[in-house]
Image 1 (cartoon, protein in one colour):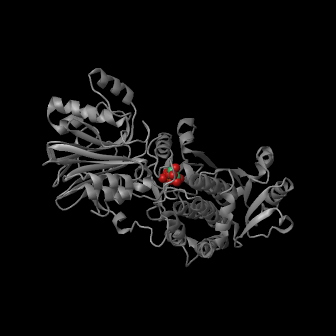
Image 2 (cartoon, protein in one colour):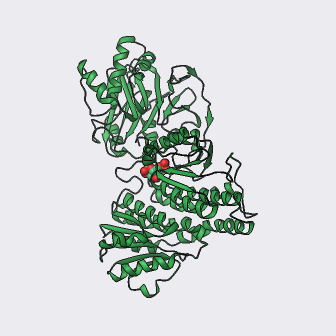
Image 3 (cartoon, helix red, strand yellow):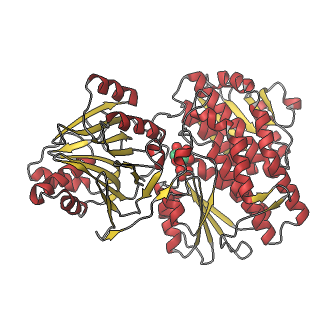
Length: 608
Ligand code: G6P
């Protein structure tokens, strides 16, 4: 989603703004721009370009922007097409603004401003913010007062960074929903959508709380809350700076992140289990796992599929009743939730707007709130009673991979801990389950040692216009995730189906041009899924089989077989996530799509 950066620097800032924007690329965007205060801070200059940052870089090379004060933005279009004229920063007289989120009452504001004679040059909701601030500035002559007055008119979820011609040592940041962080430098001050953007400049960060706005100079920060009371917020040292956000020896961030999985899954598991003693070592987070009456899981996208695997685990191993829904549905469903329930939210970024809204709903229904997040400083983490971090490190590829398997790792440990607390798992079972989890990183490493089978299958998939993924039981969410990954990355239409539903519709699609990827480990349901494969084979369908079992009598119908290791059923989803990721990745590479930033997608969806 849109990325914001702002710098009050000692020297020219355009280059540093561009570098910071590159670090925000992973959020997804379709145009970008920078504005600076030139001529001793008296003149606003800007440069914008449609498409990738390389276009902005080229435009800046032709027409450099001088100035020590500036703001930059990567835009993910919501109001108005992705074009240069809609790209941020937007300007009005002496005011320039960059914005992330949505101004909900923008059409009313736009009509009111137009009636006052304001001419608009873009289709964006952001431009009304620039005009509103400029109007108030003309009335008060104080940028801070103008900002305070303008904020009173704005409805929605938004983060802003604003600079003012004639005020060279001033920048104002607003956080009303989407996150915004202040970076403290030596005689310099920064604003950024996250700490990753600011990592090259500083690791001394203040995260604004929801509703806060901040007045920055090079030496000082004043923060006000929603009611304009002066507040202090803690200055933290983040670890984001410590992570080298580069691709290493890999062609794409996604490849790097897929390959990091053995390490980060191991790292995450080690937080929740004691491998030596083969026991769960779930931290005491105030969760009374023995007494919880019902669990309600809510999440979006890939995180939702992790939650779905969690449902199977918690029901099977802990005997817990689990409800799950996509956050955008759950938030409006008006589901009655009995007090005493646990509401569990799964989110890589911890900023997804629908997941956060679902959390607020659960809070209002007196649920205990737990969050599985990758970003522990995130809004969802801070709104939860109990945080279960995934230790995946920054995930840059827009399509989630290592965050997904780390979410599974936490859910697996949670299921064992809950099973134990509820007397459903004895010590021997606990040892077997934890022991099996300990083997997951090794299994994934050995699968990663040879990617050539996936390349061969990718050549076949690339010719298809539709692909069907089938899975049964706990493999069903993996089929769904496989289909999502393929469509996100390669733009090939793909559907995940519960294998048992084949006869209720998708069987009508089967013909030789429809590859069918079957996630069929040799678990208790293998025979059932095998019967579905026979139905596919009988209709001339071509199967890609992911299994530790050989295709046997279906050898003719199985065009490709990825031979998987034999696994304890409990760990199957963690290991089978790998082949579906690799199939999508290699198909996308073969087709030449933008693997790390697929078209139209955003990493962190901070609007509804
Ligand atoms: C976007 C991303 C997905 C992610 C989903 C949920 O759609 O492209 O990869 O699964 O948001 O994001 P979250 O940060 O809440 O896990």
